[in-house]
Length: 167
Ligand code: K1U
Ligand code: ZN
Image (cartoon, rainbow, N blue to C red):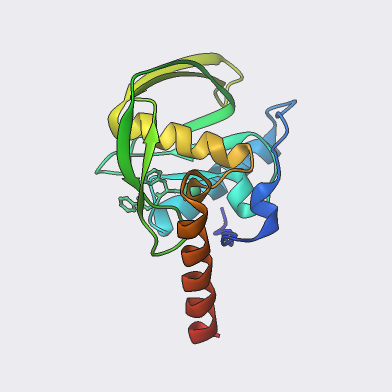
């Protein structure tokens, strides 16, 4: 397994749209293991392949306290959404920035698991937020894209300042 470097907003590679996985092979199993290790080490509750510059439809999520309920979603599609919730989100690609985003309150996602089986998961609360956040990454969208232009500009300036300080 390996820890992978995470792209930082506003890196243009975060805007790439991921392509479907055609075959679940050892390369995809290794990618899932590396994503999980990178997410747990960060620490985070989700990570999309896009964030490590791999533009395939693969995400990992684990919102459990014990970090023992890993969900690996391959070629995920939201098939049902209902209601509205607002949650203060963060992102490993936008370190130190948190803001409220409005999303569906409940979602159902269909995906392939590592055994190539079609699965379905219905979620609400934080899991529903995390699924929508990670699937946005696969479409080249970061949570700050949901915010106003003014907030996006402030975030870019703050991150650029942070980068100058740590350089
Ligand atoms: O996609 C990512 O960058 C991961 C992101 C997922 C996420 C968080 C909050 C709302 C929606 C999606 C994170 O994991 S940011 C870090 C974080 O929220 C966290 C870290 C440690 C413990 C608990 C939460
Ligand atoms: Zn994110």
